[in-house]
Amino acid sequence: MLDALDWSIIGPAFVAGLIVLSTHVPLGQEVLRRGIIFIDLAIAQVAGLGVIAAYAMEWDPEGIEVQLAAVGAALLAAFGLHWTEKRWTRIQEPLIGTLFILAATGGILLLAGNPHGSEHLKDLLVGQILWTTWGALWPVALLYAAALVIWFWLHPRSGGLIFYLVFAVVVTASVQIVGIYLVFASLIIPALATVGMRRGNRLLAGYIIGAVSYLVGIFVSFWLDLPTGAVIVWSMAAVALLAGITIADKREST
Image 1 (cartoon, one colour):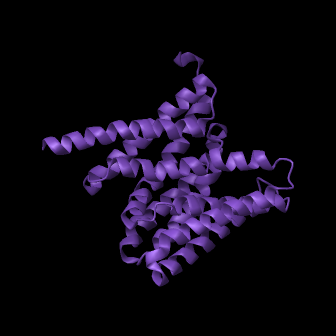
Image 2 (tube, helix red, strand yellow; image 1 turned 60 degrees about the horizontal axis):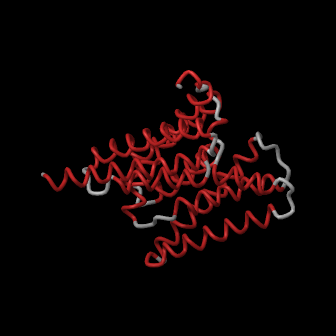
């Protein structure tokens, strides 16, 4: 059965998943620590709104303007959320939820008159990971490598601003590769499955859970001809559940 798989498609898709996980696993653990679970959906949706706005202005989908619109919108949201965290800490999560719903409905309004609106919206939500190419992955890999260096070097001394800025940049790139749903899953599900583990072991376990989930999800979607992003989300939930049970059992037995 493996001979029937197109590795020229599966290979780049799986590596894209690993690249996304490289930043999303540690960032997801920080999200849980801060208790702002829906920040990933909010920032991802704002980045998507930037992309939709660029489409509405009929900019070249492959042009730099679209990328600037997406990352500009996400950075603006990041600065805003960092400010509200300092000013209104107790209501930060409701404010994040409000930002998400405004960005989501704003995108629907911008696409209302677009004959391809539903297609654009689906691409942003579910992603097009199977259409990823090797050439498209190099810039993202370099961006994420820089983001990881900044995260582990500056974050402990940044007072929180680095978290929001790094988060905005990497989520913007991820949304355009794997879609909003898979961005949320990659951030939250491995982090949930490894709650209670030591930091180093937790990071490694999160990476393993994510990598296995992407690989299984890509294979299953390829065989069954189902939307890849959605299948990976379900695959990640199943793998994380099994891993979480195993981790809990080992913790109880020690």
